[in-house]
Length: 162
Image (cartoon, rainbow, N blue to C red):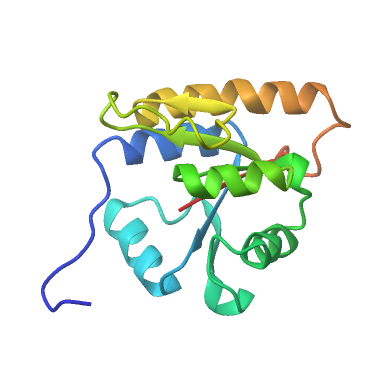
């Protein structure tokens, strides 16, 4: 890390993370970087609490986009591919769709066309607020298609983010 440099959260992160957590969506990160970087970013933004797990490929033994990295994330969370969603960049989405994971793409610019040679995400949004709304709708569909939520009212659907 460059001394004095730090990654900051986008302005819409706090409200969107709280909205998702309030809807009972399990929030998890899976990073190619050190878990401590994700933890620091989320703590500075004031949203570390809603994240159930902060995972790093360090434990997986493979870097994303290798299948083993995502399988590690699913196993660590105790969910199947079909009951999870990955919010990521197009090349990760393309690879994970082939593995059965539901996917979402956040195009913050609102003008970046999705690469036509990749499989599209199930959910696309131009802001994190819109994505939170879309994921809430996705979760409602998932809930309608499976047995009741486990104790505590939280579903087994996870939002796995980069």
